[in-house]
Length: 397
Ligand code: GLV
Ligand code: MN
Ligand code: MN
View (cartoon, rainbow, N blue to C red):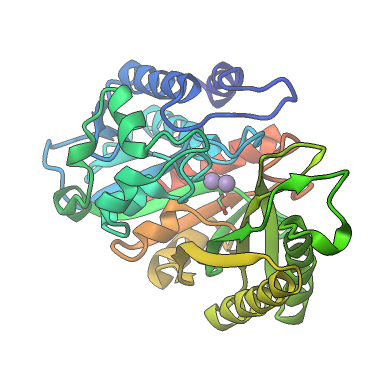
């Protein structure tokens, strides 16, 4: 089935009223996305497997000997009100690329697999790339089982409600040992690519931190200003400090998620929880940015009689993709541009274990993690052609 038909079939799944996507792990939208992938795998006679961590794999096995496999694919989950392309473009393109290889009579000399990694965005349970982190041992399974969503449901409970065994999650060295290389195709997420297709050089180091501001809940009408211990004030100061610190260190810093308790219009909050996402070209800049934001939060909290605590929820070091594979891709694509990204990917997690590379498809506006995220169909089809060319090169004897 062609790229466009698959794309149209996937589009309605998990679409929210504002046009963005809410495809959160282990929800009904996630289940529908998984069923869609299973059907596409089945239609092609690919062998569908789910690993112990909720990651899906569709295998085109030629010899039955799962060694030195070429793996492609991406993810199907989304951020809240995310775009259609982040994740699904890599999965749909991988299926379409397999179709092209078959049309061209290619018989792979190595197994070829398409992966759908679980909870890549960390939108429901807070840690991005959770499926690939579990597979590679980058997160302790005890910690992963206990991660909670906004309603207090744990990863273990959500997984088990979906029929998976949370006791079995954790590193899978056998599966990993069979993967010879991984190539993830993804929509580009800034305005960094002027040609239809590019190749990734690196992923900026990035992390997530949680601030807990704790004050005293009280009446909005009767509590004198001088008597207040309002956690919203140091929080607000911290948001502005994040912007300043990022500018100072040539980093980016975002506070995009906040939880206010009790969240009443006529109540001074008792607590504010807020999440910080910080990224920069190097680790030192990320650490310096977070250090400055922390100092600003602590000063502001002291000034307002509020307690503040900071916890690092995840951190990913700089990723420099496998140089030989990167150059091989760029060459197979006739000298495609090579560029870094500030976005995180499962490819970044896998790259610590197997030679890994990425292809980017042009994003004309640069908007991503928002409903307006877009790529032109002609560029998506160029991406499929590019991925097919790269896979053909990699699976050839
Ligand atoms: C994932 O898309 C991220 O960059 O946060
Ligand atoms: Mn994303
Ligand atoms: Mn993605």
